[in-house]
Image 1 (cartoon, rainbow, N blue to C red):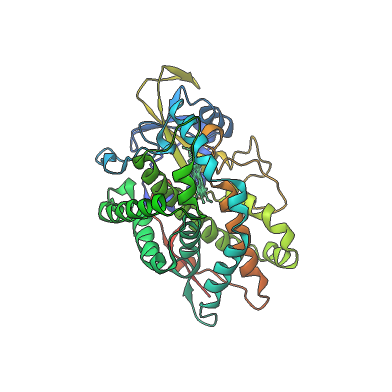
Image 2: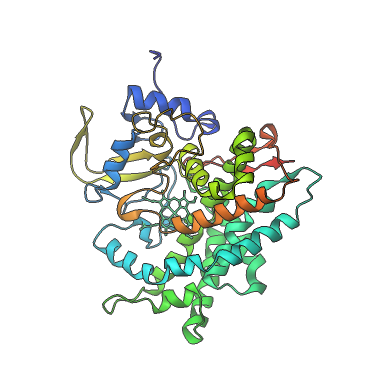
Length: 390
Ligand code: HEM
């Protein structure tokens, strides 16, 4: 263990390129670390992160969950979102949206997703270099969410373009896609009005009709939830896929096994989630004085939970730095507790189908050009803005 000064800045490009050595130091040397650069506490051990996630009374989500530099104002996009609410409101909202966002509705998407993945791959020029993000991992989840919501086919391209701009406008850097958010908001508002008048068999209609004990979602909550589906479900899945093809290119023996036995893919998806988590960390606000690892956090303090570090904690995962598709990790990449990812089943389904589609063509074995790739500059999301493959 070195004795140089430990420094962790989630916005530092070098850390973003490869945070894992710093994470190890944090876990070993400063399990509760004050980051002057981020102006918040940082937790990196698995059990600490899990404990905070399962105590939403002490650690609130209501003041925001993205670590942001001090000069960035988040209020412009703070819609009344499920993910930024605490009990009892969260419990009510989650019950209502769960009436619409059902396992049956997600499972029914299987054939649709297979079709979308095959179409996207079919359009790729396999003999040349191509950008995996713009051709495959970016569009796939956007089309799936559009389809799930019931966005009409003729609006799909427009929707996809907005969605991409919206999710790539990076809140932690202050480049808010306010214009696009407004366009999307207006679009959802008129779409919503139409579904109220003419119900269809889609998620938007189900959300309008969803009710628990006479309580419905308000107009604002409905629009907020639609935007949340994009924020939470688009770029995260894109990056799981991008990180996945990079890891499998670096582990050709695992890739061959997955190609030979597609039944191994669901297990491999869990290891991808653990090993290179798309959401590296989210934050909470402390509501009462708490002592942890000999230091006091005060009410109003922000604490960043590093899922990416927790998922490599050797206290929980043997040989945590080794990528092993036979591991069945109880990772924390989808969070835990009351805010556990509502879209986890959808993300798993999309990623399994996408990988099986890519691996299904025996003549197609990709190499990833990491030197030519562009990493996302955002703190919480780990992945690529562009990723040349050949
Ligand atoms: C919540 C990760 C895909 C919808 C979360 C949380 C994490 C997460 C870590 C917990 C947030 C917290 O504790 O504050 C991921 C990852 C994904 C993914 C890594 C892909 C690999 C999706 C998809 C959807 C979705 C596809 C829907 C289309 C949501 C929603 C919440 C959430 C609505 C908020 C739940 C609540 O607050 O009760 N996600 N997510 N996610 N996710 Fe996902």
